[in-house]
Image (cartoon, rainbow, N blue to C red; front, side):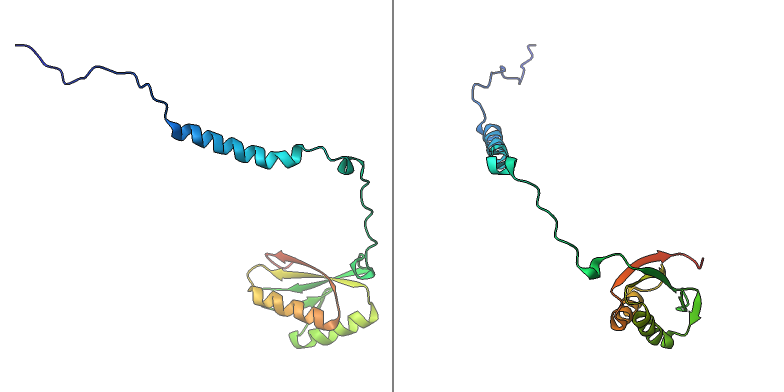
Length: 142
């Protein structure tokens, strides 16, 4: 009994698939389109001097003094180590801003407080006229 094989003779593929070739051509085209402006030697860019920075406005200067405003997890407020009632905070901040106009406030919020609490505190600082602020978070009272 003779066995018949279902295998056909292996034939060499004599055609080149154009899809990978076109992919390669398009990728190279994009690379050269993006790289061409970078390769162009522009003499004005080579000889240009660095622009001098404009002088910083007075409000962007470093604060003359920094005071810490600590807001704990129970929403108690401490201004530079002194406990304050939340209702007294706007008045204290306004007085502080009038006494020391260039003062900076570091707001230390407890990390478990909602963001709305931070927004309200920042609005109080803005209403008092304090523009130089920094915000940090803490896990527990120091």
